Length: 93
Image (cartoon, rainbow, N blue to C red; front, side, top):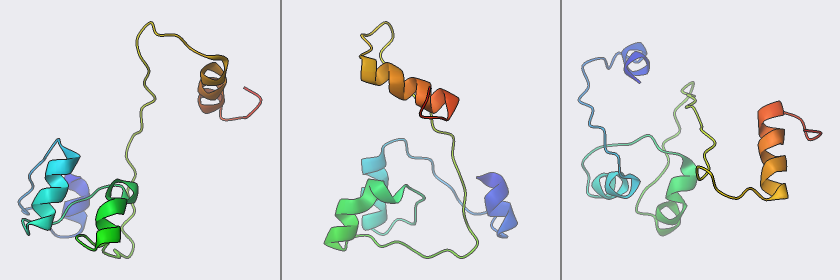
């Protein structure tokens, strides 16, 4: 994120990290700034009109996504297959 801000000439921009997505959305709704979130995380707020998506040309970033599960938990056949597909990248597992 620091590199992305620097590329936009915003290296000195104040940045606050908020772990709670709900708290982040409420602060933005209250006018405390902007946020970078997945669009799927704000569908209700977009529907209500309390937040809106800003169209940022040439600004696409990716973030790591982790597959997690309960340690030692039961794995159904469907879960095992989904894990295999995601790990292998093919539907043939």
